[in-house]
Image (cartoon, rainbow, N blue to C red; front, side):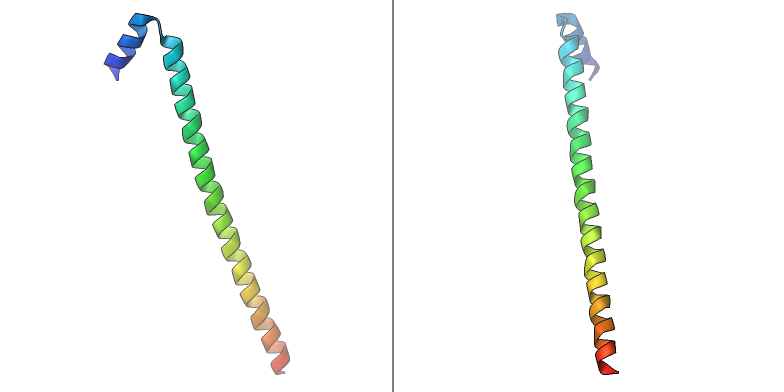
Length: 65
């Protein structure tokens, strides 16, 4: 990594290096946030499924009385 940084600095391409690092970090954060959103949606779907199951069980209990 140091060799690449020295090479960029020698050519005066520090702005390109900074832009690349910023873009890499932003892309990484985007991927992370999308993964978290998928996990959150999955947990919410599981919650709604369990709530539906509970409602069905409660309805069956009422009709059996």
